[in-house]
Image 1: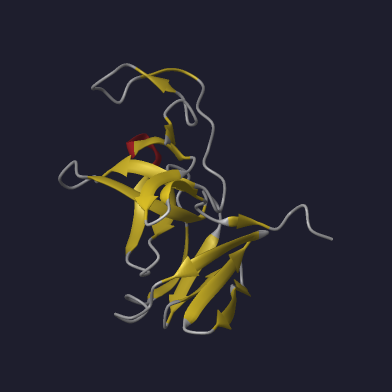
Image 2: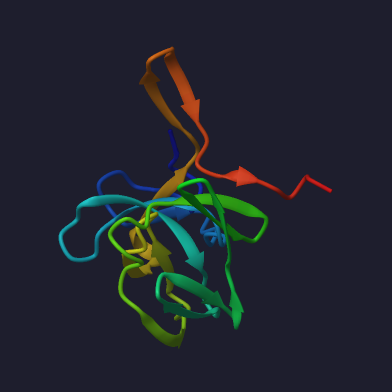
Length: 152
């Protein structure tokens, strides 16, 4: 499910924003159109306008701070701003990104497999809220991340 008004209400089939222009937050799972071919993607926002981002061997550094990783069995988890995400690094950590400041009209997005990069804010279409899927036990909600901000 996607909150399509999360970053502003748009005229359907256009990039025209009627009102609201909230910026994405670090950790948002955003839905957007590719600036190259219009394909719809869903990726995590790891850096916002003004942040300095660097990627080295799949590890992200935001404003000089390295993201924390933990392994639980065969699964790797990354912690960014009180949120815990699972990573899928079987194909490597994606391309390295030298240190750069995110422009005011963009954010930096990555998938669980680490690939992607800068995204113009005008291409944002909404914030993913949850994934609904059918498994062996019936239908279930799959959280996009674990929010650790309420833990002590």
